[in-house]
Length: 71
Image (cartoon, rainbow, N blue to C red):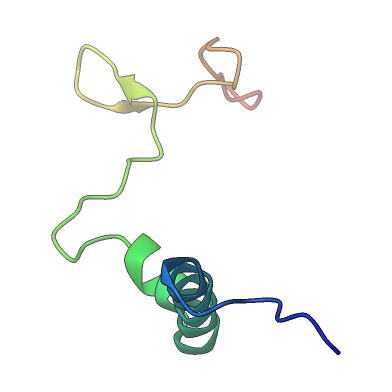
């Protein structure tokens, strides 16, 4: 009458395992937990460098130093 789509065996186990893994990642948001930065990890500073006096120096995205137009 009807053909069986998934026969019992390793291929059925692999398909079901992938489905269960994808469902668990979606339901429990495991991707957000794995991709979250570690507690001890330092965040990147928002400055591009420092001057010879140690002051932060901001740069444009193309790498040119930024100057304040009010100066």
